[in-house]
Image 1 (cartoon, rainbow, N blue to C red):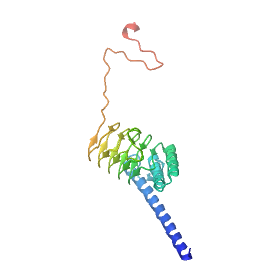
Image 2: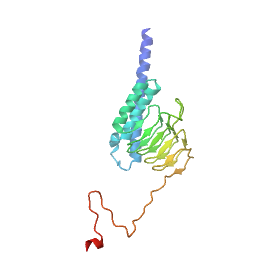
Image 3: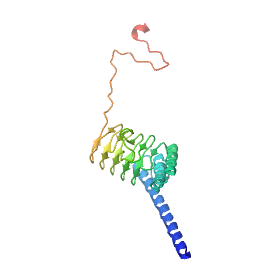
Image 4: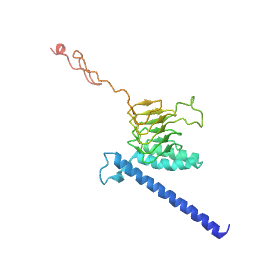
Length: 220
């Protein structure tokens, strides 16, 4: 190879690497700013604390594993995603596509499947699952996970199953189970727990290891 050609190739390679580093740095700074704006616990001057957030760490590692996955390095991509899971408690398949300014608050127990597509400005809380319907229904290579639009909020414990579409700016409430498309701007709510007050005639129940309190008749 002529000297000028090899120098040109090296320059292009180093330039591409520098641009990739610049994109990673810009993405991380944007993630830190997103966490600062959406988490009330982060106050002025505490942006760097967001580096300790599992969601920020998981997204940073996912960007690398996703590039590896798209480049055909499946084993390396899966190894990195499993490392991220061990460090953060957040499991993101390296094939999942995640947009800009995504914020995963708390993050424990979040699962995002291979063919999930997540738009920009999405917020999700701990325990969210973007999953498939099961191996008996989803053939290999099919699009079997949800598509999440821009500006969507997914509450703690929300579960979205199958190749459904969640429209832009929709809000999926905590513990909601979604099995069908949700239109843009809609709110999905799970049933609220019912509170049943004790009846006056019911004596108070003892906690484990405690004796039941005496009634008026037993105390005489």
